[in-house]
Length: 317
Length: 220
Image 1 (cartoon, rainbow over the protein chains, first blue to last red):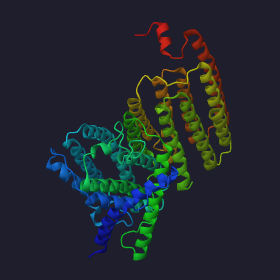
Image 2 (cartoon, chains in turn cyan, green):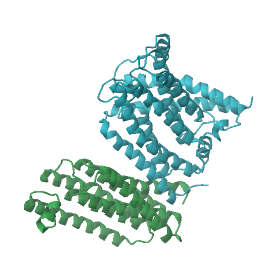
Image 3 (tube, chains in turn green, red):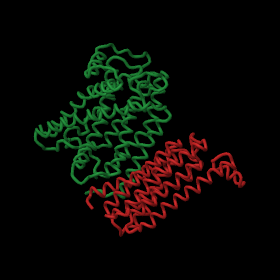
Image 4 (cartoon, helix red, strand yellow):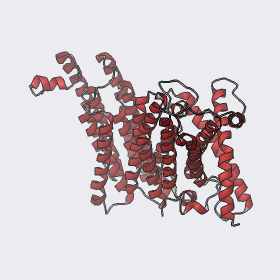
């Protein structure tokens, strides 16, 4: 087997295995910041195991879509996450599946989740789905604008090439990159339902978005959906890490030692980003649902501005 | 000039544009003042960096003027005016935030389109700097157009002037006397506007400038 494929397989396994740990880490840091003791780091794995063992209760009027959707959502999210270079660049799928494919896969997952929320016909599912779509209509263009900025800057839409390009000397500091970074951070906060936009820890009727859509799920279906949400958070953090902090990532064809260093650097970067995310979350209050479009509008504006400013920037080639 | 040096200059000038957008977005009085002070700090940094890059010591004085007048004196004075006028509530806007932002983006695009062909013969650095400075000026104009409150129009005017200083430092050989006189003329304009604010308030019991249209018989 060629080393590229081995990396790809390893990476796909890694993102799935690390995702619950990441959500455990964020919950733990958050609890400590609020002066609680918090649950152990491995609690998300235990939750998933418990959910899988439990009986899945499905509403009488649920269609086949309701049962299939969790697996499709996990599939799409997992595939997207496996395409982001985490510890090594030069993934074999990189040429076929660039960053725009990742955005499309995430859009598919979101579409399925909204359909599943609408399927049973409860009012909460409807509210959640409509809000999710409202946010998505701004979050997706914002994400794409940030992606365009990066692609124009690096001269490629492949994440592997972008990451490798960012590692070269002479990239330096650039205002467009800073704008794209802020836009990506805002989009990832909104997409993962973190605090200023949505609170993943509560079931308050007036504000919940993601929880409202998955309210009807139980047992193994819920386990799969929770896993997909964790993988999505990991994906966004990996995306930011691989583009904006590429240091340590192993270049394709490097020795085993480099891969080990890349892996250690990746875990370190994730831990750091999780810490920053939770710090931000504890420092800020949740905003009203109708202010979220404004918040996402800023991300869209920043992405647009970043792309425009690229035309007057010194782009090293 | 090394690549990193010019990157930092570019970053600072770009931050000026970004802070202009923050000014457009902000709709609370005191927060608006804070953002305005932030823009003055960024401007001072930017000018000081230019002074270091161009080995032009007189630019340090310009940076100091920006820091003192626009970063400290004017925000403090405006804060006192706002408290005395009793208008520390939300600003009513002629346009809502979304369209204002889109207009702003369009203006940035316009200034880049205008500046790129005109300054083709110049170095990349002057080109960027002038494009950014023109954007800041246009965004200041936009702010003056979209706000009705007289105090926020004053802030728009001051941020417009920040753009002028940014343009002046990017172009080499701007004499110090011009910069100092621009700095002082802004201060005098500020004093005059401050007096006017109180006069307007005395006469119309508001600083909403639509009241003036009404008295001229132009209100619809």
